Length: 361
View 1: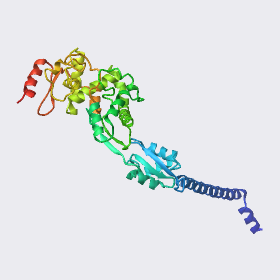
View 2 (view 1 turned 180 degrees about the vertical axis):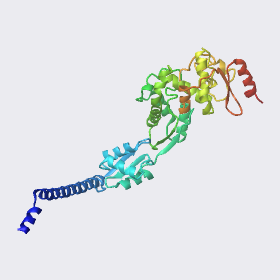
View 3 (view 1 turned 90 degrees about the vertical axis):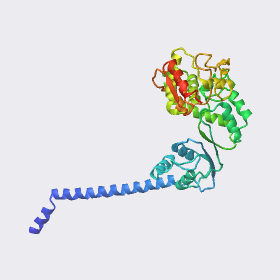
View 4 (view 1 turned 45 degrees about the vertical axis):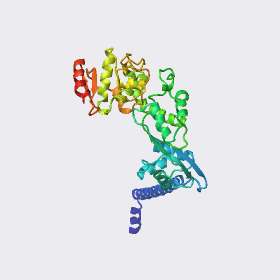
């Protein structure tokens, strides 16, 4: 009887409930562990499948990566052309391995059998199928100077280049209406000065379009400020081109811009030598005879802003026009020794500066 009582006590409802509760929890945790393991295996398998090459390498893919293409855009191109299966996983791989920042532009022959590592190595080392050529257009170059520069490198035919400058159909809003100007070169000021990379067989149209595209990109975030100043885009580029040709030092461009705006606001002639030299077609100092040239670019003779830019302004000159210094200066004269300018509020001060810094032996 005592043994039966002991067994009965051990099988009390509370102990039975606890026993089955513990057993159920263990069963649940076991099932959960199995599920997580299965999910992990499936997940790893899926990632392995998506990161593995899509083919066996028998398919050659020609891929062009233009200058300025972002890592995300490159990944999208790789997926679109069947070089990788998933662009997002490729981006994750690049970030985990600190890759992608040094990918090089060019035209590549890739295959559908490359691993992420092999693709990254090819793009980083620039294993291009076709070599590219670099050229630099300095700030302040005119259309003629750009044409001569490119022709001397064998990149363009000068006559065809100028013909496209005049008549080529380029899909940028700022090109519309440029035909109605006073000078020979429709796109003067709009071929953005920079270093470019093209293929040796690039056409004249492609090269011009590349530089116009760069201008469009640079100017896009400046349009609101141009509107705030009450200027048209054409006027802003024209004024920036005057500064580009006048100033030898970027750190005084915004001060020169203040003089230009002060003179415009006062109804004064701009009297900018660079515009006169553009009209006369030579690069020497302005002579008294030059000041009598009947040209809308002669800012000693005609008030207001010249009809077109006189050169291609760079970023510093554009920013100087958009954010000029606040001054009361109306005059400046160059120091022949340093190239810097000396500024004056009155004509008398200006004459003193001219005698001291310009009229030297």
